[in-house]
Amino acid sequence: MAKISLMGSIDDELELLERHIRMLRTLRENEPMGIIRLSEHLRIPQHKIRYSLRMLEKEGLIKPTPEGAICSPEAEKYIFELDEAIADAIVNLKRIRRMVRDSL
Image (tube, rainbow, N blue to C red; front, side, top):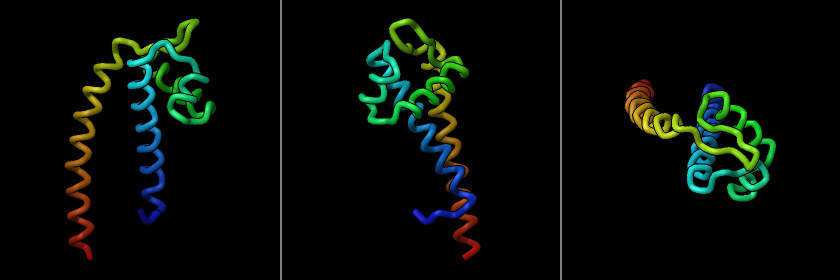
């Protein structure tokens, strides 16, 4: 995909969102999991895992335990709401794409 400066931050946010979804799914299936195990399982560097765990905990989607992170009950609700938000975003992106094509 061609890099456009306005798109850079969108791509970064999508990458982060994908990582968070992968982590939540992995935790749900294998909890509890610590940083090292998550990093090895997902093949994501530990510093990125650590950052995402902090963000997910701040949002109330995971809880730390002595054995590792676990999903909170709010995680399931978040995934459902995220699915709806993605559907809305797709509609908006298609509208924007039509606008771009009409400008060519």
